[in-house]
Amino acid sequence: MENSAAYLSFILPVLNESAGLGATLAGLESLRQNGAEIIVVDGGSSDASPLLARSMGATVMETGQGRGRQMNAGARQASGDILVFVHGDTRLPKSVLDFLENGGLKRAAWGYFNVSLSGSSWQFRLIESLINWRSRLSGIGTGDQVIFVRRELFVETGGYADIPLMEDIELCKRLKRHHGRPVRVPLVVITSSRRWQQQGIARTVVLMWCLRLAYFIGVSPGRLAKIYYR
Image 1 (cartoon, rainbow, N blue to C red):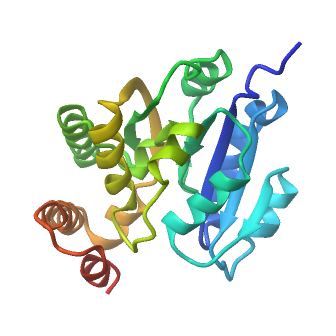
Image 2: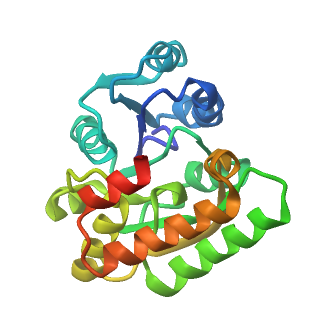
């Protein structure tokens, strides 16, 4: 009997994610045991991320830094019918795991999940509601929402652009333009709220929305990355 999750390849681009990577990989363990492929693509970590990933049964690759570049490398290695791109600080709760294990994405072309932030503040509930509302209206997901795409469609589309920021939005725009609107799975993945907690909730929200608006009106990803990472 074919393993129930063998149609899935999970690709995790990481860079110094050892603090949260263990929990993410532990959440994928039942799927790995049922045939799913887990590929961690390290972009040059100075911490124990690669060692941790190997110890938890993942296939580990090493590439140059850059999420788009890392995810493309993982996709070339992958053998599953559906590629699922998961950030190293994002967790898939049991409802999502059961959905995937029962073949929930087998007929999907591409799409993403709803997202929840890990923090307990009411402000995080508002932020995640706005993220989910925005993606529902626009048909454009972000990496925190766990983007998935059929492997042949990913190859046909050309994969992620090798740009320093907005690679997730750029891919979704191309997929939507050439292959129609995404499947929006009404289940919730949980991503870390550390970015908002470290940099300030209001400041981070304003920064992210301004960067996204600037990208949509044509500001280059390279220029946006300088603002984001400074």
